[in-house]
Length: 129
Picture 1 (cartoon, one colour):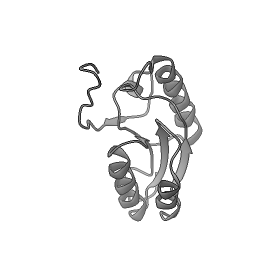
Picture 2: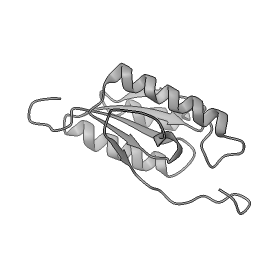
Picture 3: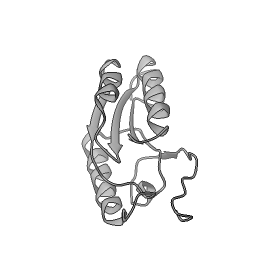
């Protein structure tokens, strides 16, 4: 951790296909402006060009993107398992002080890093989650 900060580095998940993106990028920008290192891990789809431009506008923000399906997408469970392993690998690589999750399914693993979970709106598809 950096001196004077209780949190020096955050690994944060987000998806690129909904409003969670706006929330995560805004939070990342605020954290970075306060001296916190942020590693942003995206799922759902690769970031679009305008999203990449948003990330590039935040000095020091690290981006790792993937196409792992999210729990509310069709037939996601194999990808959910893979994304959890991917996040554990990022957790080991960056050793964040906090893991900030923006979806439920990636929180089911054995991490030693403290976890913050932000719950966003429920998305129903065909009457089912």
